[in-house]
Length: 113
Image (cartoon, rainbow, N blue to C red; front, side, top):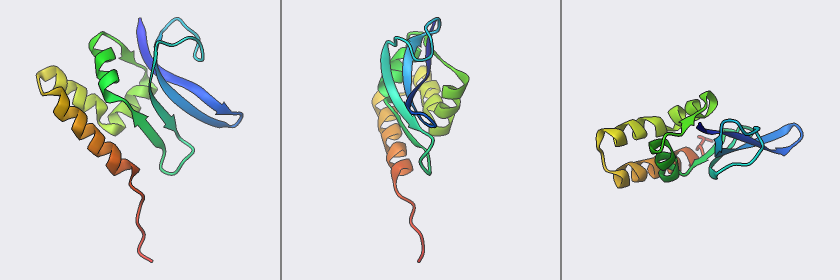
């Protein structure tokens, strides 16, 4: 079975993760099919980049996200957009919505000083 899961990268005690499409029988840091995103929990707020077009394609082919990746997808709204894609909404509109949400997440926080 093909899974979408996290692959650990980074130095000792400084983890970052790639979101990869991989056979479920391969080891965590073993051979993968494709990199579809990046997650760095050490930044404030955490950095998360997802190529939703590729994620949608792999999920359409039957790839299932692991629990941790599914939580990240729920946080970014990717899982909701995939459900709407399955119901018949246009892919282009959903991808534009995802890019707009990513820009909004990446915008720096402003403080009143």
